[in-house]
Amino acid sequence: MKIIRWLGFVDSSNDGAASTFLPINQEVGPVNSHHEAPAAVEAMRPRRRATTALLATLMLLMGLVGVVATSGPAGAMTTDSGTQGQINKTGDGDGAAGSVGWCNGFLGTGLPVDYRYHLDGWNTVWQMSKDGGATWADAPNGSTFANGDQVRVTFNATSGTALGNEIFSQTHAGGSTSALTSTLSVQNASVSPLTTATGVAGVPNPGGAVRYVNDFSVTAGPFTMSAGSPNTAVFDVTNLKIDSSNRSDCNAGFDVAAKDLSFTIVREPVNLCLNPPPAGFIDVAPGQYYSLPIDWLVAKGITDGTLPGMFSPTQKVTRGQMAMFLWRYADSPTGAPDNGFNDVSALDYYNDAVSWLVDEGITGGTGPGTFSPKAPVKRKDMAVFIWTAEGSPAPTGANLFTDIPANQYYTDAVTWMAEQGITGGTGPGTFSPNASIIRRDMAVFLYKRSCGALLT
Image 1 (tube, rainbow, N blue to C red):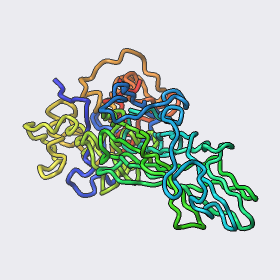
Image 2: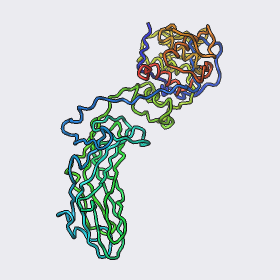
Image 3: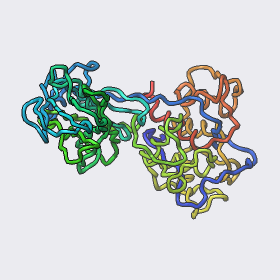
Image 4: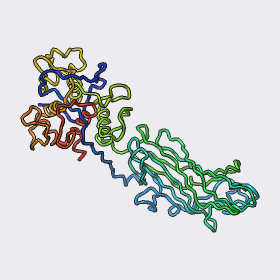
């Protein structure tokens, strides 16, 4: 009975032997059906489905979630003046709206009379990005996040309480227009403990004898979620101030802290097949067909790469390393009798793995007394390794690859792998059975075998 459990896999990437993944450029003599090998680029890209949890109940979690308006896209975390009322001004001249002398000269120079008003039109919009900031979408309160997701918030001031809806106004004789800057402070919950982060933006201030500011907008973020982020992250807008290039002594702000502008997200349930933590290899670019499978291999403890921070995705896989993958995938079982191969020493890092393969009937070697541990594994032999470890199930359909002849030792194995969705070949109607398998495609084979049911 085979004891392979297709829930994890371990390769010999750093299997305790130096240079364990150096490619071997020559094939050993007669090869039996147990000397594996896939190599050409695996054409089928695993599809990563976004995971969506039922989170409606979280919106009332411990009173942490603020009032959610629906002025934005359906369900978006948009809080506005329609649900929470006006935001009052603070700082110098924070008396009645339109009070004179709050900070003359704030909008410019000359002989001005400045006014500042409360905000009776405003909104905050929280957004999230799942692709490193390439695209953003308004996010509902209680959204889920995975490592690498990003969060940002935009505060939009759209009108003041003045008769003409202005937020700032100035009447002046002579002088020049001041440069205004808005600063939004946010409780950054992407880290633990929490920190305060800010976003800065310019404020429009048209010139002329009478200057009006009717709206401005400022964004804070992005904040990147990581393994160190709390499982429940509560962001909040804590301060909004306006600075003038003319009057550094002016203290102008708006009392955003009096409103509930918080935004809560929760870590999505971890499913290693769908959202494993990033492995962080510098030679594995995100978004490649093999990126997710490699992340999965690392998360399952199957490999930690070939060198610190390196996976070596294009290196060929040898038979000794293949043995390590399968053995560790089965939780490194012990107690198998010695394999009896003349070319496998008891001191070799793959000795126990090869002994286990022989004991399980997964391999009989490449010839009398030989295993050829340094020979590269071919795609057809990789298929046989996996198929044999599964108990050599009979395929139910016909082989559809034109380069897989009938009645070869690997025909049923390749046909079965295609039926199981483990491979789609290397091109239309081709499997490339004699190509040597490289590490990234090895990762794809094993990932699809373990996670295929979740990818359909």
